[in-house]
Length: 292
Image (cartoon, rainbow, N blue to C red; front, side, top):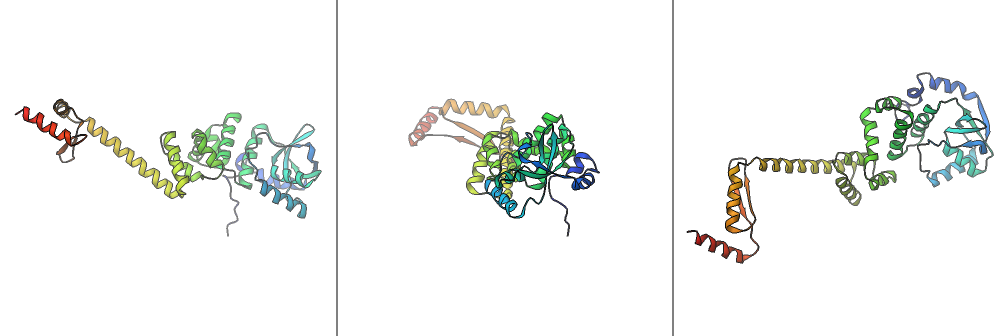
């Protein structure tokens, strides 16, 4: 059985080099009890929401079994900044612990955010919007290109680009993804639509009909093909000979009605004369009779 840990990319080795995990393992014996009041959450923490029910369950586990996995912090003057383990820190506070076990790591500012992002994704999935915001902050605040970011998290550049494109979608859709109403798969399907109005319309339909990701992909694909066909038809109409335009203008002078003309692939076609009621037919006959 493959026990390889699941998560985003290659983890800490991708961030700090191949010796990072080994170095971390060696430092496991150096666990320090730190006063909880001296610990501060990471301002760059990518997780924005904490499930209160899950937090209460974790607190109860700590109350019963104790803290099994120490948190990881960086020393900042007289205080400590959390690198990973904010959920455990919060749960420990709920239990009423005054001190908590922690590993102290030396981490540069630029790596602190990256480490927090990867640690959180590996331990408990962030929603896609939180991942996207975390990646955007890495780009903005750490000066990373998308290529460098993809290398750090061990993902394809296209995957990183898809996450970050989520932030260009309408706020309503971002909230649906953030709340788990739409998955990342649904969002990727919506990204193939070329404007926000279409994205909003299709998102509403996905939610209303409870579409699976596959159904959403098929629906968006059908819409795109239909739009392409319409564009193709319009282009074909634009290429009609000038004589077609002259004929429509001539007929409109006679009937004063909406006239349309369409040419088929085989060279034939159809001329359509619109009318509003039966009385218009009599008018057509009268006008044609005058031209005999």
